[in-house]
Image (cartoon, rainbow, N blue to C red; front, side):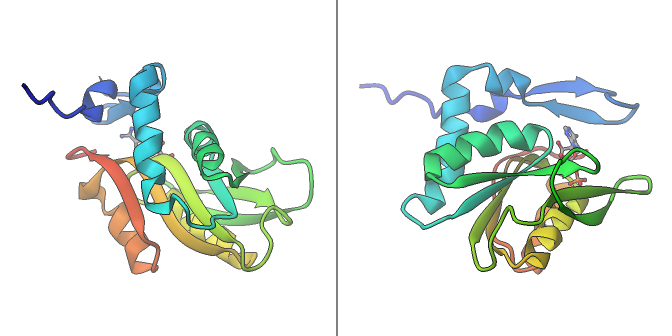
Length: 181
Ligand code: AMP
């Protein structure tokens, strides 16, 4: 009997050249999200290391991290915490500056979204330079969260973000790697 070829998630990601500006290869996960089999496979693979672990909360980074993180939280029977761009959350927030390619911005979460000592997994669709995820880890740690891991569907290893998080003692799980940026 022939063994079916391994399902390759990379085919479910669409690459858009020169978006949002020249020189960038934008890794578009809307095609993966729209493919039932690929979406399920991606979520199953992301949660696999924590199946049975007592994760209290999944924190997702706006906006694609909400979609992936919500599904991950459901699968882990954990709560979901949105990390948002500043000015969007209605209750009292904590805020953290983070590095962008040019300049910086600020992200926020509700001050009571995670209780001290709770075990949190951070989720986004993609890690590039790691500036966004680094800001999110600092924000979570500032309110006493225990950041157990960070997971992303896509890694751009040439930009060093995953290594940056590992250097902060955050285990990193990624499913696909693409060269360049
Ligand atoms: P960074 O802070 O450099 O790790 O950038 C990560 C954030 O920017 C994530 O929220 C990604 O969704 C987005 N991002 C950065 N580079 C790309 C890319 N080449 N394709 C798609 N999204 C990207």
